[in-house]
Image 1 (cartoon, helix red, strand yellow):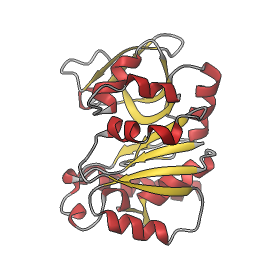
Image 2: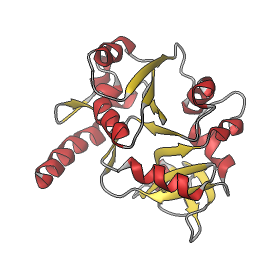
Image 3: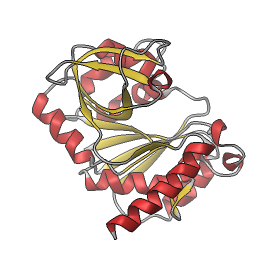
Image 4: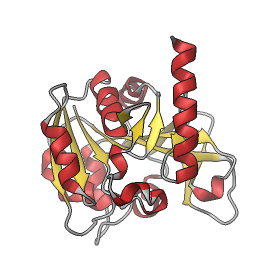
Length: 234
């Protein structure tokens, strides 16, 4: 199984930290977030990961060159940012013959077991499986409406008047046919792809910890919470 780890963002909301460190390399409890994600994907049965790069790409390449743990990783450099959906479209041939593939945003920190996502996608057999969580600021994310079976019946990215507090958590399982739904020019998964999947996707709740580490405030909270979580489990 293959997975996209979407990590090419500039990390502008994390400055000045990201003036010298790529967003996916910021440390959590002494480990780059990139390694936390790669371990999670390996645990879920992913054999090969594509990490897209843009800002400070050589720092990520050097780190990957020194990593000897699975899964295998290929770096995909984007001289100009393609957008999350654009990255999928540009690498269509890489996953075209596969049963399914995963896509995850690297600036989220979570201990969610991705095997749940994989299992649900296989059991439900729809075009896509999304992860969702209850947010206290739903208008800041992609608001998902579901029916009693978990079928996605509505989606709106950053709506002014959200219909619920159920928000996209940024971890997906896709059938390769989903790439036929990406418009031209390809842009963003939330704005441009997910609205096209209403009625053909299912959503599952994230069990466990989840934090957006895309801002300095979120990063500081994540460091404290992740360490506290580790102590509880020890």
